[in-house]
Length: 78
Image (cartoon, rainbow, N blue to C red):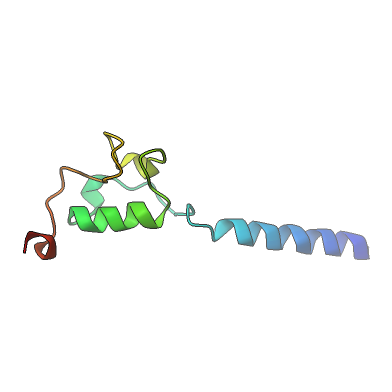
């Protein structure tokens, strides 16, 4: 019985460690879910986005820039 408890605890810890990784996100996002390109880029980068890892399909041309068609933020326009 003790062996079973140890195995269950180890599996629970392994699952928790994996769930907290940089690619763990709760819902598929679309460009329209973000108010501007900078917000989309932050989400994309924070979740491991890159030209070869198209997180949620936000980088249609695979150049590493998410949601190219979204307007830039006010801060970027300065």
